Image 1: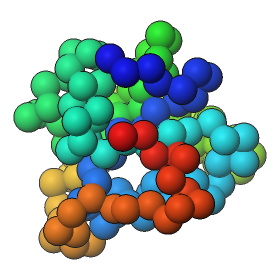
Image 2: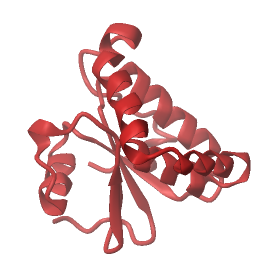
Image 3: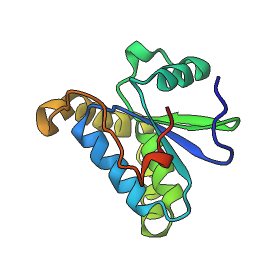
Image 4: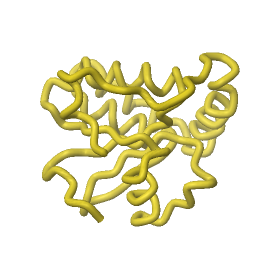
Length: 138
């Protein structure tokens, strides 16, 4: 696998989903510590990371947070870990961990299943502005 940036957490996201792209923009805006890098699930690197951590790319309908050499998270656990890493008021989101994972993931899956109908879909993956290009891995 290509060398990933050291000390960065990698967010794999659906590059054609409007909701997912909005979430990425939100994280970028609030990532004051420059913690995250982003990879579209549909990209070659996204597929390579999924294979490396043992997630079948055909069955993934979720955001994935990959901390190279440490752990990976998906679905609601990924969202909560991202909120925790953003810190500040967002770390209060980790209080949702008291809700059993099965219930959190049921709600997550419901939103994921309907995201294209509710929020729309792009024809191709988002192309970052030159200023944001360093946050996206290819």
